[in-house]
Length: 215
Image (cartoon, rainbow, N blue to C red):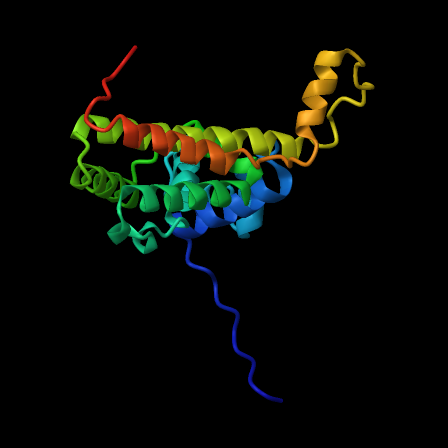
């Protein structure tokens, strides 16, 4: 009889646990997720994850960091200037989040302070200041574009996850609604993302050196 290779046991670490947790959330949804179910998915004691994460919120931080890492920000077109790199970053962020609609609220509800996220933020500020923006305006622009993108992803995630629960009420017949319905003909959910992103960047370009923080 041929020798059989003994099965190897996966070494648990923060990255692996976060990846398995994200896959589980993708499959069952965030509302049904629990550390007990994660333990079963890992094939380990439910308390095993607590050797690497202080609590469930810390795990969620790890999942948000994992999602950010998947942006692979080092490969963004940094040499091409702030508009190109900002557009590529926002598109990549949107696509990554929409690939995990159950986890979008998790990402949106917490700051990501991993080394990769901090390094990317610094690099984005440097790119913007190199193109003539003040550091304060560079930060405002970076935050505005990120919030626009995450907000868009939240809206699209709601549409995706709520497709089976949307109202089946017949459309009203008043003229105002008909005009809105006519305007929507030929459009698809999410097709406003690129026009909105470009309009924001056009506005930032036109106000370079003149923008001010407002309450």
